[in-house]
Image 1: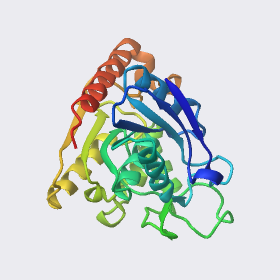
Image 2 (image 1 turned 135 degrees about the horizontal axis):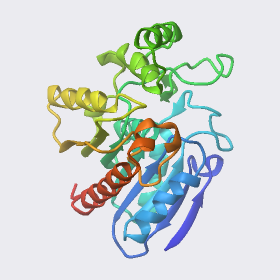
Image 3 (image 1 turned 180 degrees about the vertical axis):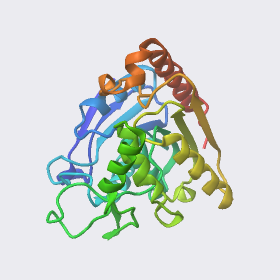
Length: 284
């Protein structure tokens, strides 16, 4: 295994390539929701150990990058693909968890070189970016060609959230993203029909953070309406939580993880097996 590093100001993207050095022409870009490369590199190392080269990427927070998920330029994924092709890779896939899964879908939607997308617990609509309004004039979480993409605004969201918490006599992270997502429309859905390759959605019935199962169903329906020419599949875990990734984050904050730790861990093992088999069978 060999490691190559890339810097945003020099290369147009921030990343670390873990090359399996076995002549395989496949490579997987790995995205996570947290900034920095620490978590993506864990996955990249895992994939490389199993024979598949992987590029860990951080799409915000690095030197020269946006400080928060606000007007993230999707061009950095095109720059990454160009660098990977220069390394000799011909098949480029992308994998992400949670916020990273939504970004993986967006990246593939605007990067024709990506021919496989694996999205675990993804959001389905482009949301308003985080950070302060004074940071820059762009309000969408992503941009392309210098223009912000249509997004779901968060104005009035906290009032809706408070009313729901009072009505249901509970406070859950899911309520926040569920209320936000319900405001979405076809206009600000992730334009997954633009992807030039197979798509695998991985979600859990008991996701307590994001309405990922509903989002995946909506995006699958969008693909059907658009006559999507590639393969698409939605696999739902009956046992897992929002944390379907092999290296879970903040599991202590998820009630299901606390109540059913063994089932959730088994779901992660099962999900990893599905991911590895998907990469193995990747032929586009």
